[in-house]
Length: 115
Image (tube, rainbow, N blue to C red; front, side, top):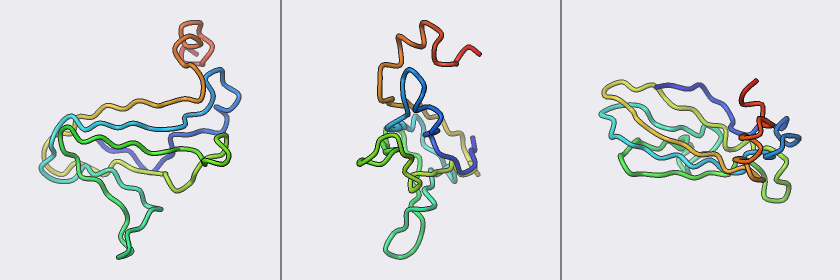
């Protein structure tokens, strides 16, 4: 229920058949009594606080992993973390939107998913 700060785009994926992850779609499937926020530590509110999204069932987030001028370059601003759940249970689902078709290369075993 916790992930350290990371990025969803890896520049090595530029050479992969499906290309890099362009966007992350993240859907909260449960409410959490306390904790479990998704934090973007490099994105600041006017107050200087980092952007944190509280898990609420049915809430969806979508964020870019790459720069709009160069979709093969990682956008460092969207590094993010799943903060620890203090009370309750967090259920969520995500989908990564790649530059090219992901399904067919994955069926063929060309994505490295089966290595």
